[in-house]
Image (cartoon, rainbow over all chains, first blue to last red; front, side):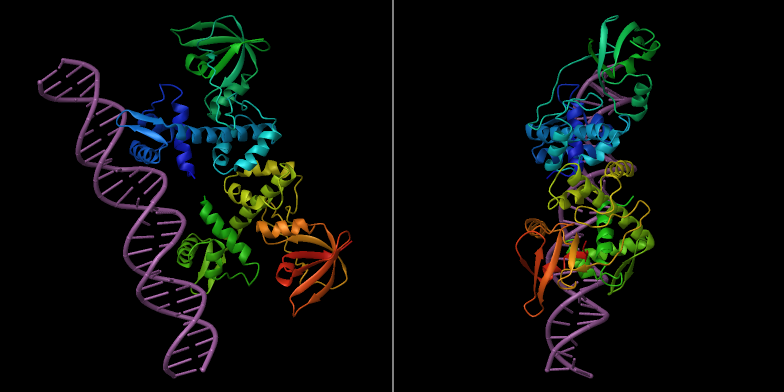
Length: 220
Length: 220
DNA sequence: TCACCTATTTTGATTAGTCAAAATAAATCT
DNA sequence: AGATTTATTTTGACTAATCAAAATAGGTGA
């Protein structure tokens, strides 16, 4: 079986390949895993000999179907564990990421299935990130973000990408959890600023960069 | 922090030191961890330089207070996880040991505390093994076993030591889980045989060795 | 085209954990 | 006591994962 290091590499390649055409540059991978670039190169070569990834010399790495399968398994475990920590253990959704990061490599298929059933087969975790199915199917619906959506339209937050505690705490404090209803009231590209209003509460401003982490759908 | 390998060594030393005066021979430790004796020696020396154990050359290893503290933490995690798997996820008590073996190294103090509260601060796991407190206090009450207890007295099973799936399944199939009421009807030292009777069910015979794994208390 | 900057790959070392097999100490058995 | 068996320790080698630093390949810009 894959070591947890291998699982982390595969998961990270999957996450980073969402942008781009699936080809992840070494530098991006290395910095996401906080290793030096040389380490990533070495590891990617090992993944390639194991048939889990293709190493395109000097251009980047891409998962093979086998590698993708493993990565989706890790992602499923991660997101189900996060859901469990919030729904059952009542932990704060802003702090469960790191916990799940550890547990995802230690939980068996048998335990995971029980957990999944206990939670009622959820389709998304507390951040709104979609949970891959047991068969490795991942919802890949594309959403607008607060940085790209239409102005003045009624919206609903569906997902908060970016797992850092600080950002999530900011989102939490301003009521921007998945499910919240909002409307963008203005957007100034030059100033890089987005202003918005929730159904309840005072107006709120945030940078374009921050706004890009909040995915939204046309809202009820 | 201690690696999971280190945690496993410390936990195993603690478990094996229950017999003996706390001094665990290398051979016993090595075979419990399924490594060759030389590996255990090397590791024990490392534990000694880290102040977690005393290496008594050619005689064995003994935990220091620091090492014992760590080991009790691992044991607490292991047993709380087993309890969770059985009580909440409704898994079979005969198969949770291996699962807990993995998870015990990946669960944080924060998650463990929530789990503990969710379970109602249990004092023993599904096998009847006592759960160390957060402060590292471990119930060390000494019980009789079906191999040593009085004959004909009403008893109650309090604990099934021995974590192997086969043995536990045998115990389960014959209704010898913690809580069961039994009476020893006979014991033949020469034949190495113990016969017993549960309040409900047909008589049952087992070897002295097997009987030694079932701890009992004078029964209600 | 040539020089330079940047990303990537190589090379040589290091650490944790392990095994195989030789060396040694202790215990046991005449 | 002397010889033999058994447990333990040592030694040398290996794998996975990592870093530091040197080497290299690709552009980019003049």
